[in-house]
Image 1 (cartoon, rainbow, N blue to C red):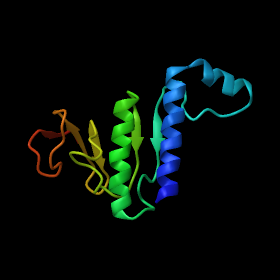
Image 2: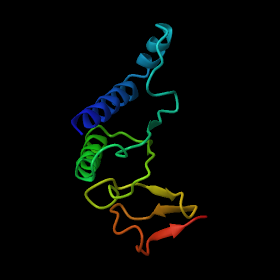
Image 3: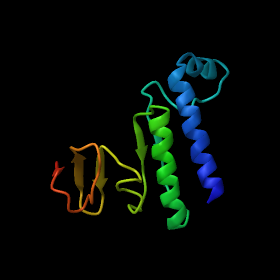
Amino acid sequence: GEQSRATVARLLDHAAQLAEAPDQVEAAKMEGKTPVVAHSQVTILEEFTSLVDRCTAKRMAVGLMNITRRRHLRNIVLLSCQDDFVGIGRVEPDWLFECHNSRLLRFQQKHLEDWETKASATEVW
């Protein structure tokens, strides 16, 4: 749990630094290194919380929202087979794609309520 949380925190910190200083992206490329954030400034966290216990997953979600708000990070995409970390006070996404029923939900309000039954969620697909 702690190792996963630390890894996510390091990746987000690095993404924030690159977003704040785009010249660092070019410097990393010049050194032959692959920058974590590409020119599009999208950060993808694959298997987010998939390999940790559910209590740790919820703490990671809270931490993710805290750092994204504090550092004004945008364009973060989470990929996970779990959804228990989505909700008010946890991860509050702009949109959510449910693979099991091929449904894309876009959330209209700033705060997310129960996303399975919320009337403000609109089905796009």
